[in-house]
Image 1: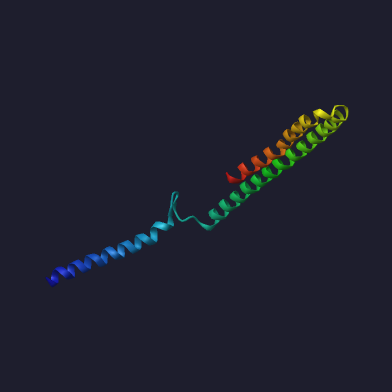
Image 2: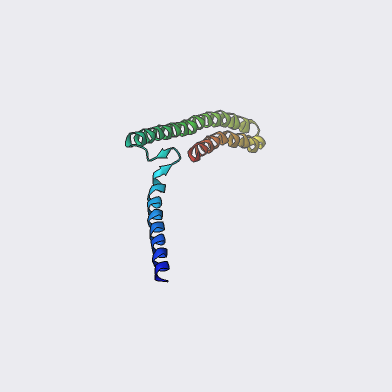
Length: 119
């Protein structure tokens, strides 16, 4: 009985050591193989930073161009709305709808920026 227990303890000890070794190796193995050298990791970090920079530039361009376009459209529509309201006061409510539609351009630019940000 003692020989059986000793054999079982030996097997359990070997399995424990084997499991500990595997537990140390598994995190170091990635999809491309063993842990990458520091130069490769630095190059990947630089590439990721360049991609993030491009995303932020695209977000800034999206918001700024759409805001300028919306400002231009609201300016033109506002002048026309005031001119038409001067002649016919009852059409002022209808012209405000067009100004709201022009402001939607800026909101679409902001929406595009958020979509770029979450990708």
